[in-house]
Amino acid sequence: MALNLEGYSLTFSDEFTGDYINTSVWGTKYWWGGRSLSSNGEMQYFADRSTPVVQQNPHLDPFRISADPNQAGDGILTITARPSPDTSLTDGLPYVSGLINTHGTFSQTYGYFEISAKVTAGQGLWPAFWLLPQSGNWPPEIDVLELLGHDPSTYYVGAHWSQGGSHAFDTQAYEAPVDLSQGFHDYGTLWTADRITFYLDGQEVYSMATPAGMNEPMYLLAGLAVGGNWPGAPDETTVFPAQFQIDSIKAWALDLVPTIKGTAGNDILVGDRQAGALNDIIFAYGGKDQLQGLKGNDTLAGGAGADKFIYRSASSGHDVIHDFAPTGGDVVEISKAVSGVKLFSTLYRNVRDNASGDAVLKLADGGTITFDGIRKAQLGYDDFLLV
Image 1 (tube, one colour):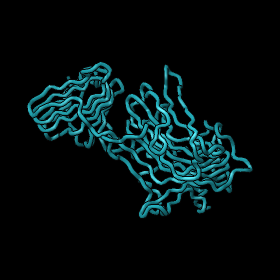
Image 2 (cartoon, one colour):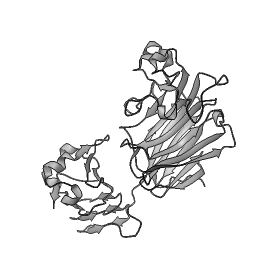
Image 3 (cartoon, rainbow, N blue to C red):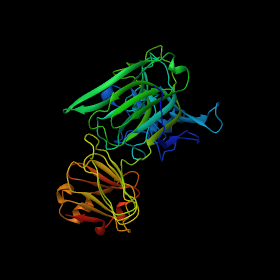
Image 4 (spheres, rainbow, N blue to C red):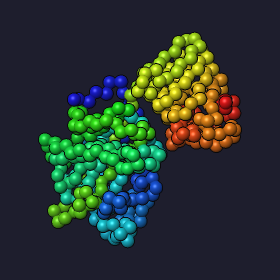
């Protein structure tokens, strides 16, 4: 089945048109500071211009942007892997390579995620594009592209999740009709609340049910690993430098279409109207409205007027309020059981600004309320009613 993005809007795009990777968007190590995954048996050190190995050997910088010869104004990011000249500078690891990720700068729950790239071939080379939770939890994980360089006509897709307290996964091989290292291809995944579907050049290659609990924002990662338990070590046939070329990385999100709509009057709008359909999109327009999403991950917008967003029952999920107006009379009515606190001062301490600058209130059951476009400093006592 062909990819259909009707009803989706672009939310993230980097076509690598600058002189160097945009370090305000892309991190070049894991969020905890790691530069390799020893649990995978990887043999590369993910370097950048801040690391001694590159400072002493500038030619080992793994990142380079060049003009796209096929599209004016476009660029290509090349991630290059090479042998380390001094393993004392690379944590004892014998190769230098690169990783980029958007932890703390971009994450998204559900949508379509795509990399346009030319993979590298060679024993022990492991180019990849994947998604991990912004929270730092693992699992879950969605693998959009994993390729083992000794077989450049086959790539792997799949997911990891927790099931009954144990690690579960579904990894599928797709045998392409061409050598994928000989040209650029689009590798994508459409992640919804119900299914995860993988695409190569816009054509479906595999689809699976979305595992339970895979419903939190995920960020993007792309990198070229060397060696590891899965691909094995490079050998005398592996050619270095090895290059993973990326033309673009993009993400799309579903345009908001309300599942429950109000009127211009004073409406009482309550979610969970259909069994099994808990992720409501509730839009109230004019008037003094009351909105209550109940269970699931709900999207709420009160529209004009002084609106009340109600949280009285637990299992609230991860909700987003899109047009909360602190100075316009909007209020969140929340029970002490749901908030887990008895005083506003304690509740306020449970509010944190996320990486996008949006205030997020953490609830007692692990759920959250995100105030889209509103910072914590804009919220005050009058914006909450503890009951």
